[in-house]
Image 1 (cartoon, helix red, strand yellow):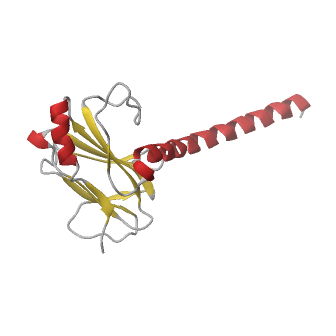
Image 2: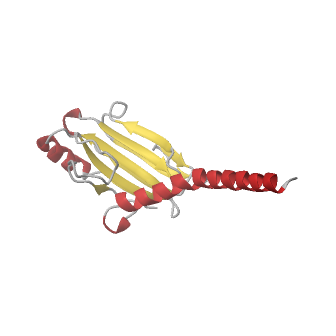
Image 3: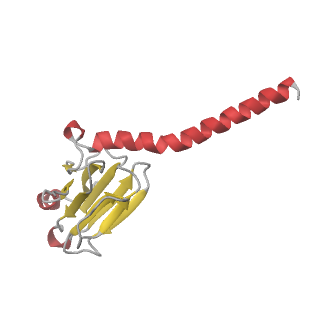
Length: 175
């Protein structure tokens, strides 16, 4: 092999390794930053943090919708499963709960169209013991984010939705 070919081969191998490393680590790094931002005061885990009404200056979430009220729960299942519940929105307003794993994969979606009386489920890792009678969502990672979005297109509806979402829970199961 010539010297130039060896250099080219070395460059291609290094570039491929860097590409694979970037593709693997980028989602985890971005989710870590999102968990810090969305965890509320002090980066709390396993409890909902309630966002203010969205304005043109809001940027905790990239391009948030001004018609939605956002709540988030950075979760950590290393201490055991958590129970998640979301009260219905006033006047049958739309509610959506999305669950994201540590690599940014969306692993579960619940909404008020399928659950008009409110949403309730247990989030657990494979192998963790969970109570019966409640739907269970298994997370491939110990950490991630739960995002609660509710339709609130004006200040009056935001106030109603804000009051309803304060009853939401994202907390360890008490055993």
